[in-house]
Image (cartoon, rainbow, N blue to C red; front, side, top):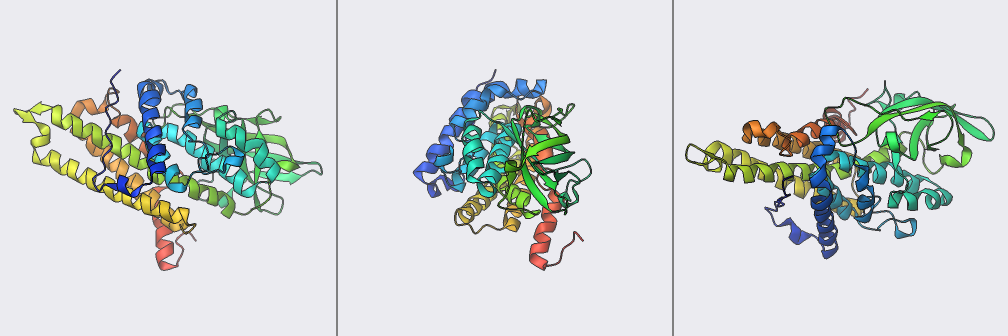
Length: 392
């Protein structure tokens, strides 16, 4: 097992723009990843197993609902702290960050924002500690980029709701204790429901044979006449805007997280280039390799500044969905481009599990698609700047 020698690049002294609390939170997450994730993640990815042993550690570094108020078990941190935690976790692995993102932005966030006080007190403290793990049911077999076309539905049966349908590509589903599920009522209006493991007719089969996010558990959510108590309906927001509000929070976290993956690939390539001797000198001395490294650090720096400004806007409740889409699209594209370039710099070693680059590259193939595809986010920006929708 190789030691984790990662050194984070900070070409524009961005740390100077962070508060002491930001740095403390970031460094705690960074140290934890080095100690608990790096030593096990390659084997977990090779075996296609999510390492459940790290759930407690994720909770301890505040990765579950860091911006949720302390009264509900969260850390009460700001949005930049949330972003920095996601950056450090994804530096370790995108799949592990996915687990934390889903728990925070897609499960805890809607319960906090759209739920009742009773729901907040019942679920949030246990989700914050990892005693409960959650999943988010929006994507369906026939409805991905068009979630409004969902067919999962529930009917009012007097003292309960009867839920039917299926969701797929759901992170955490195989082991989730609760699922925030989006379904249409009899009038076709979308609502959120909290479904608990053990409810009759609720199953969560795992998805196998993935080439990407192999250290993350992915599966389906299947509902066959599931009786959901009426008190499990999230009452404070309905319509497609409700799940999309959750996705804004998750996409924001991804914009930061992708920087972490890019940082790791850049740092690995830089270190390798200084050590690998060809034609009598380190390959870092050749122009083409310097071009690759210079472009990598430039793009990472631009992404850092984009994410930091977006975090400031989030803290001020001024960030728009379109701004979040731009950052998610740009930063993930940046990361996957750097991963591919770094892979080439390592030559044959680039495909080896001895290095993290190929794992990052495969993971980012999922990240560039989920929570809004690369092309859909481009069209969101297009709609925002033209006022004309390309979706209809």
